[in-house]
Length: 353
Image 1 (tube, one colour):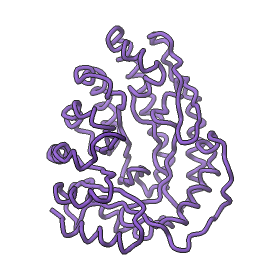
Image 2: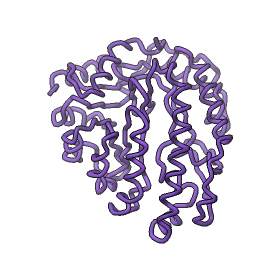
Image 3: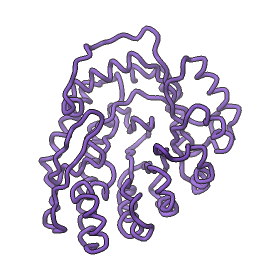
Image 4: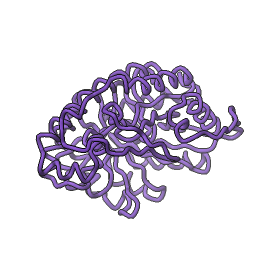
């Protein structure tokens, strides 16, 4: 069991139904609130940006302090992400991370579209393996250790090659893009399988995803192609669709992170991928709210895919009324108290359909 997840058996039941799109008394709801009487277990020591991402002890201390201050209600889970940078698998091909407060950046290193420069170096995975094992050893049965943010094969190639250069490559050097994508995919599959073997016992035999607040009873990974906001459907079909078909077939459960309305032009192709179970809808700053895209969300459900939504509080009732509770996960934190959380549960049960 997990120390900071009081209602695990009930949450597990709802998650199992979620993946099966079967009926329970409501949709999945990941809601957190402040824990009364929570205390600081570790001193709040300042860390360098690099330490914040790479020191298991610092990561553990911050997570434990957060667990003490937080109540993880219903399907909300205490889960610590392994953050190696989005599409961080580019590091196994030579990219060097630039650690900054809040994020990790990568500078392009492949100056020419030469496939001989795209070489997987397994030794560069070793630091990530050690961080993963170190955090799992510290977490024990206190909280989950989530899979990392190594997602997006074309996104990783964009880190290596540079955004503008890769756009030109898709036009002038498509064979390079195809072969580079396939090499990165093979390395991604190998390393992600090793990460899962390290974390699965800590995740009670399954996988967790931290900010999507998902638990799955098997190998679950996030897929994405944020780069697709800049390319046409024709290019998506040629370069990205094969990536999604290959990566989604490698694991038991996959959730596609759809980052903004610019990706809607690719939605039909994304929905055609059998191995994608869920679509996680992200509202990008400056774009319409989640509920303003209700027709697209209904289309996703009609295609047999689940949904992970992170709406604002005043959107929740509208979404519950207009979407099936089967395969629906709604996440939001910061409710003022348990009473407010219980009101949301009552609402979800009354709008179950």
